Image (cartoon, rainbow, N blue to C red):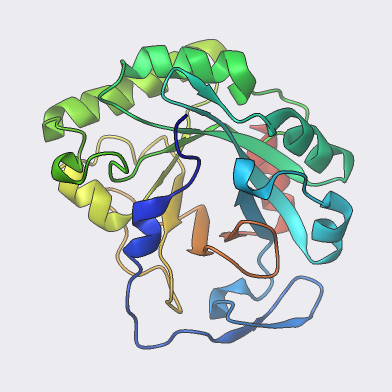
Length: 250
């Protein structure tokens, strides 16, 4: 079975001058190790099968306002805890969305997008569902082919095919999760997606997001750590709670 995690992004933490700063959550609680940017920004997290049965009421009490739940990987794997995680977050009043872990050397972007939609990646304009997300990162299964053995042009084409199929089936373009290093290495710094794809940037041990991938002038979500107050990875939304609800509603 496919590994259900983000192994190489976690190894590639950026060593910044400031690590472990304090900030205020929306509730006004001081949380050590949270970026300065967290003040007044909605806090969230992302989970996969590793978190299993999440206590969603506890997560909300600790400040969770949104969550992304891993639904699928490639065209063969579905998170066995997805349903209870996804519905549990909704029932607790937390905005939730689904994400897909891309494995571009296994099947086409369109094939994986269709599999994602059939297994949790569908979007509903109910005001409680975040747009689906596409997780693009280094190959965790073959270190010699960290960009999956594909050229930069083929990676760009794969992402475009995934995005086009997702929009055709759901009406939304995917949020793209990545690091600046992966994007510049594996897409050649493509600027093809910034205009109509929200950016979910991963950058740890830093007081800010640093340089963004080519094309983007701002981030929508920032994954700033892989552990913390909330179950799973720690995230921020770059805006107000009202803006987050608008983003969910489309």
